[in-house]
Amino acid sequence: MIPHGHFGDLWERDRPDQATAEAWLGLSPTGLRIGIVGAPRTEKLVRVVLDAVAACRRTDVEVVCWSLGLADGPPSWEVPDDPRIAIAEVYRTVDPKVYATRLAACDVLALVFDPEGDMLATGAAADASASACPPCAPIGATWWRCSARPASPAGHTVASVAAAIDALTAEQLAGSAPRPRSVVRP
Image 1 (cartoon, rainbow, N blue to C red):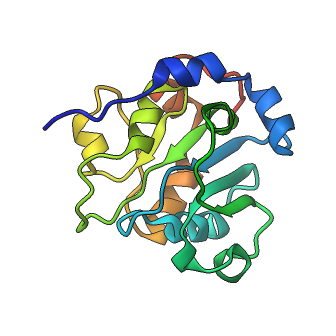
Image 2 (image 1 turned 30 degrees about the vertical axis):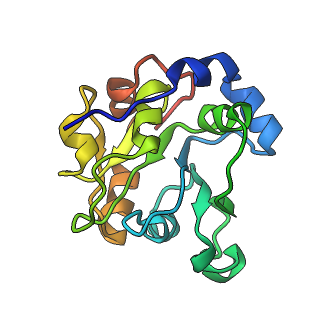
């Protein structure tokens, strides 16, 4: 398998600290911010992650999604009505500084793909590898097999992703991140 390239140096150069990123994006600090980034894909289970956040028991979790597809309809039609879903926007290409700011605001990136799909690599996984965002990926995903850094297993159903979110700890994030994060976790 040929590894997917990443632009880690670019993201690091343009990456603000988390507090600056949150302020720029209009977000308040929270215990755990899950990001969904990158282009929509048939195999990318964005709705599963959004539904899982709505189903999880944590009150300190928030999801920011910049990966809805136009086929999903306007976000207000498809997104669960839950205050923990802070951003749910249709995907659009943005400049590197905006993308780096989005990455900086996240504590973990959700990389939840249909196990029956054809995703062999994803730019979002490469970006997680290159940034300080550890991935939350399903067991058996390409990322899990190919990464030198462990991901937090999440499965690919609403129930399994919600359970993974509820169980995610600061120790798991610290163990999978390339450098320590400054956000305190339960």
